[in-house]
Image (cartoon, rainbow over the protein chains, first blue to last red):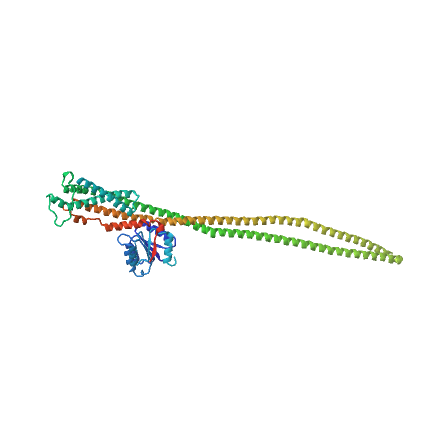
Length: 124
Length: 416
């Protein structure tokens, strides 16, 4: 599989945990520790098949990142999952309006993660 | 009446503060930890102080009315409610007592901030430490995972390629040995058959010779009869046949000698045929039986070796399969553990929410202190220094929501 899955989280623990889970199903992983870094990578031509982003991250939060990413060429239909510790309905609605494909609450089980990735990214 | 009012107000404020703090602490999920105890104390102090201040200001607002009745100040024209104030404590004017409390609070409140900042520092330290430990755990788990995967790959390679090649080579060798033995046995059998054929041919040649011997003996008999006839004819010829009689006599002797020689040859041939047959059976037959016996033992040993090899391979396969299953069972929890490390980030965010609440309280405390020490404070001026309840509520709600999802069983996944 040529294209990667981009993980965006300001927590090194989450980045490592997610990377290891996704590598187990043969996925190439790209990491970014902030919304700005993720956006920069995508603007520099990084091609991805899916993005998983945290909600609360420094200057640019996950919802702002999704809004910005959706405006990039070729990113309108790429699945974007929000992975966060929060479960409030209003936040979910906000993420949905911004263009998120789904909402996952931490901690997410490896099996569940693998299943959802396989569901959203054909061929994994 | 004034002292009783003061004590009741103080006790009431403390009780109210404890109740509020308990509710706040519960909503933050800080029931058990040591930092929660410290936080509760601070919150209790702050809420007590706030309540006292509010109570003090209520008294201050109502006081001019009561004071005015005693000729100590103007009465607010819009204040129509009749509030009866308790008599001054220790004969001091009420405003002085309130000012004393406010001064005391203004002294005490700033003492909370270093404690709050220390707590925040500890919380951040815990976050950093747990982050380092989590990274270390993941790194170690990755090593374990890598080792287990390497082992599984090795086992798969060994099971499916290397050992299968060894098995195939061994089976090929065994089959080759079986074929060599079968070929050898076939050659030996053919050699035995050839020897028998040759012996049969020798027997037939001997039979032919025996017939020739019989023919010679028949010729000898005929010759003997001719010699006898010649002797009779020589006797009839008288003197003219004397010489011929001698020849006939010699022919007769030669004929007998020929017959005897032919008989000896025939006897010799039969004896030779018997000896060859007997020796063949002794030399070739017995050797053949011994060789066959040895070869059968070799074949049996090879077959047993093959069966042992198959048992060994089956055992090896069973061991490999078991090790593979066990290794995969080890690998799965490793992945689960790597996933479970996410609790560190959940905890980090909960602690960050607690830190934000603490900072909020700290700012509020500073603000209240400023208001308390200000000479022209009013109730309205305190209102603008009120706690940012919305931010505090959001943080408390956030922490409260997180407290219910730290268990992976309660994880939520929703596709829009």
